[in-house]
Length: 440
Image (cartoon, rainbow, N blue to C red):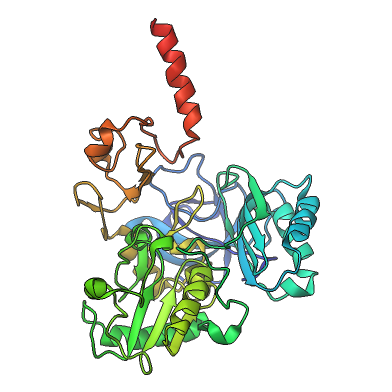
């Protein structure tokens, strides 16, 4: 993904500066630039991927007069230095002295406004962080000056409400991703032991074959399987057409291809031909697939493929083709529409995007009601902490919990409003103690 420039797609009603009404606008799409006045306040229901500013120039890509909305792309292609972004990258590479490497990275980031998770160990680096564009990219540039990291694929997306992470955690970690039993023993530095990466365009071609074979259930005779190597709640927010919902709520518990006889019915890889079946694996950014493909390779699976750069790279490159819904992300934004990644979408693709964004494809964890507004929350019971989708009607009656049983738990946190995230338990414990003193 291009680090230096960015074009951003926006879909909402704007007032044309040099035309009176939408009906007077010329035929679309057009390459003619127009000046628009940004609304003083965005509607709560407006989904946009660019922060409106007055007197900015836009290039109109398509016009839907009956819906009162324009699809436009900002012609301001360079991030401003103080514009907040989220950066993601990882790399499996041998680091002889990871503790020394951590110290070097901490030293470089001293005085820079970076929040996020950056982990290093003998097998490489895994980073997700936010910050002003200038600081965020200076770290990437510094890292790429090191030949070991010069090849990394860096993905950048907007963060519209400042930092997407509460603080910086940069440290040595035994496992770059969490998996039962750890990953330090896996041959991740050996490319031949990992799946073959496919570019987004190659992946798109492969998907055509998967969707041709797909019949709603695992076809035992299929020669191609699409495997979502994420969590169930991530699939609920968005997934590739033809991918089954993962039966796990934490990647640590993933066990595809490793099931015992009693679990064989829930394992899509249990009965397939390991020699002749193509397995297409995907996740958000690619690292979970790389890790898990090494496990499958050790278990005899031959034809393993991963989506290079993950879903985010695909949406940036190909748009929402064969994608249903939004993309769950592990930061304060929680989920992003495809338009956050694909800057320029053809009118035909935009129509598909509108359908997918407005359709109800996810269900409330409590009452199973179909949801069009996706709101994830952690269970208010600290000792459960399940991340789940919940409709507005079930939030208050269950006190922000995922089930009736959790409502009577001893460590119960308050119901959160909007996009707030829970703080550490001691914060709520201290408030409760103070309130108790006031009552005595």
